[in-house]
View 1 (cartoon, helix red, strand yellow):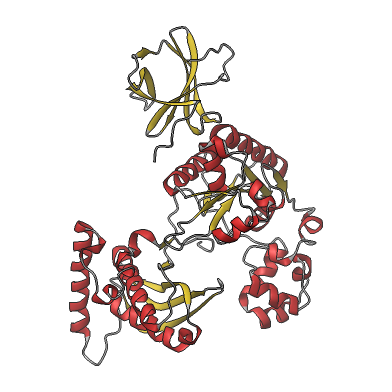
View 2 (cartoon, chains in turn blue, green):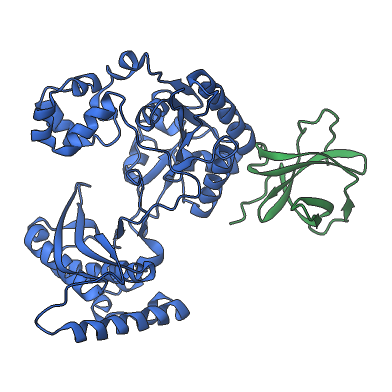
Length: 415
Length: 93
């Protein structure tokens, strides 16, 4: 018997939870929006009624209100959504111990077993769908298939409160006519490149020659083709599996746009401090620093640099980030938000090549200093020790990068 | 964050028994400034959505003073939903 994998996707998750908790807004167009004062004022999710007005996730609140003046905007209540996410997971775990979360609102469930075929998978999917509706009061769309990629594709095909089956014998008829962009990991840039190869549908992608794909997209191109052919074999992680950390990152949308390199310097040193502190907490050092910046038109670009030696010192990370920024991004100012992440991680105790220039002693002293600052912040809060640079702008000084802006890794490739 | 009450939703104070098996059994409940009401029987316990009141949690279908009603434990709050419950014999609390 082949694999049977479900992908459960909670429909308009945040908005559904808000509508459940507030019956008065249930029949109105509702959007869960970030805090406009702190410039996070975009639509995070909207309910079906708001969707009919053409409101999209990512719209600024004023844009959304232009489309629908009677739109009800509610602030997010993340602790409540996290609780709901856990409750959903508990239901999935009644059917399998192989449950892999993908964000708060999505999860893969591997229900494969000796007596489980795709039809049985469909029955389980309906049972889960009904239980979530009855027990939690929200709806999910479930995709049932023989691999994770098609299961995810299936959950996107019929919404809300529906089950879609993509079986091994019929997937070509169902999946191949869909646009290539529907496939997981095909973003706008890849879609553009595929279009240049005249591949518009998933079927076109499946039929592209390997050498052409490899030349244009590199190894990921071959991976995408294998997805299109239904050959994805990636496992659904077990419940108790803790994915190895591949990167540690932070991003933030500051209270006002970054208009000068000095603004960026200040924000990157804030982010570097929090990333370095988290690496020290996990006992890791990084060799690769990646910065990203999002323009006021919401276009994101990123670039990275390999360091000479693995580090968990905020000063070294901030310096690398600023060098990258000066070289690559300074001409593109202003920016709306920026991010910094560290990868190519190695454990703290791993042997490392020492430098000839004899600054090792200084680095060790700096490490001790930063550890002392970590200790102070653990005991008295993040703001007890701050770098002078962040005090230049009073509004930046209020940002708490550790508690407000953690980027959680998504472990799809793990394993 | 505690959500506001509405016509169907009334937060209550509860005295409960926490069993060795981890189960929670409500014994007494009290609305703000109201008298204590002893729960005579619990007819059904399961997780459920409270559509009218707005909320979700472990739902206890209770009998007290000859009436049947749904008591929800939406951690860390308890509330009573004033509506006809799924049990057949229903009155309002």
